[in-house]
Image (cartoon, rainbow over all chains, first blue to last red):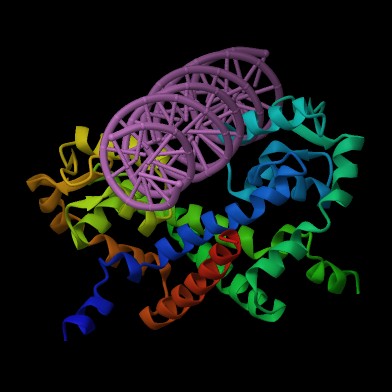
Length: 152
Length: 152
DNA sequence: TCACATTTAATTGTTCGCAATTGAATGTCG
DNA sequence: CGACATTCAATTGCGAACAATTAAATGTGA
């Protein structure tokens, strides 16, 4: 009876999906760390590179919308990527407010070196691709519902 | 066909479960923010309080194991909670290396004020408890597999 | 007992993440 | 055209998160 109550108590840590997501994000980060160290990237920097490998010459704002990050996070991060010679930052000529982020040749070249990363993550996840895809879709749907509430 | 390839490309941002988890964690944090502001707690501080509300007078190390955090994160966080008069930090008399964390009366009292938080999160999630529990269990299982790989 | 390893917190330095503010460029409306 | 609002990036300040190191307490084996 005490056990029954405990497994239903919404104030118990182990019952909170948010803590599951929070701690899973950190676990992922720890798995990525040694892989990304070889590329001299942090995980958020890796995310920015993923965006740029899909589409080059993107406004900072668009990167922010894709990754749910603002200029307060991205400006210093992009300056570090620029210092590492992976991207160039230039003001748009049509709209001087915007900063366009473009890959350097080194930035482009890094895509190949990063190709093995998703494979390693898949292996560490120790589950099938279809299971992961299903989980991913559920989590994305939950995230989007949460973001919808915030937007109100 | 190009679409088919794109939805399978493991190097695409939208195909990565890690980004789903990462962005969901941030979405959760944004939903929690206004709720926790009323308690003058950050989300990691709230997690520590959840641990202490379950069991009081806990070594710092045990909190770290529950939350997957180390002393580099917890020491300053707990000092802030102590400055807010929510916890006391005392050296264990049996083992002077350990620091025991105990709730103050205010820390205890905060549990009641925090009781409505999980309800609000559930509402924001906009899905049934059973669905959330199922997702939580899947994510925890994935997290534990990832942590097992790290431990090697 | 004494040398040595282990455990535990604390500290330092770097990078996120975000709120709040600033300042410049652009849009809009009278 | 000109006042005003909006958009966008940059900046500042604070709180995580973690690697690496330090220091103290404890445990272990010769």
